[in-house]
Image (cartoon, rainbow, N blue to C red):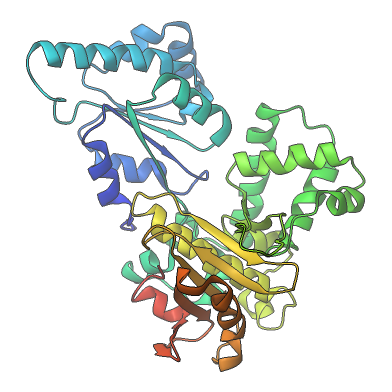
Length: 402
């Protein structure tokens, strides 16, 4: 079944002034389906196909000549050098249009997709600066599943995650994530590096899953896995590059306090994290000791998805100072410059006023900069109490958190 993606309108809107549109995101997050539905008149080609990739590599001009009005080029990270030839072609388009006194011809563009950040974005910055809009498609949000009339409760989301295939095809999450991880490790990673310590690498990824919402300690991971800190650093970078994990940075400014400098670790998809933890069904989550971390991961990715689906880069942080004051999430998006939104996250299904205690403490430190205070919890209500917006995770389906 087709699931309407909330990024669609931003994708079309951001494409208008550019001859190239670049869409990145995790593998199987729905990039191809979205691009083909947004630009149905553009021909489609996939560099994952060996013969297609060989043609594009040996004769890039001849390959692109097949598409005089542009095309959707999928998995472009497989051949980032093709972007130099795309640049030459779109610059020629621009010259011809200027000579004719015209703006960009409607529908004449290249749409590029990729699921690996590092090499692709380096190539984009080098070859397509000023010529492309760059957007990111993350797995399905709670609101997208709600609008598609698919199950989207918090336990379902923590267990199944947001990959479209799991929901649209009714796949069993453990089977899907087993295949997904195997493909990621065996294909994507082996193409990026020569990964000799496969067993140690897989152990490291599972340890990362067990530490969602915690401060990242390279030394602790290195000790637990039995490899060097340099190796752990390299592997963490690989997981970031492949859209498996992201590191939430701390928020700090010189306001007379000492702040924690280490980032926190989260997964782009809670279903993958749950599978790596060994969680096989939703029932296990009710009493699982790591439920709180998974729920926090779920909520933070919901914020990220909301802003990314508007075509914005999510500007998210957390607060922790040396006095032990903490706030789970600091949000810069959607507020006047210099103001911040403070979010505390609790997996409990009943709200208690104690949940807002840290918000009040940090708000006093920030003063008028703390423009908004919110508690997201495991229930379903949505109301304001004592200046704090209380948002049940089930209310996110009706009105996304932002």
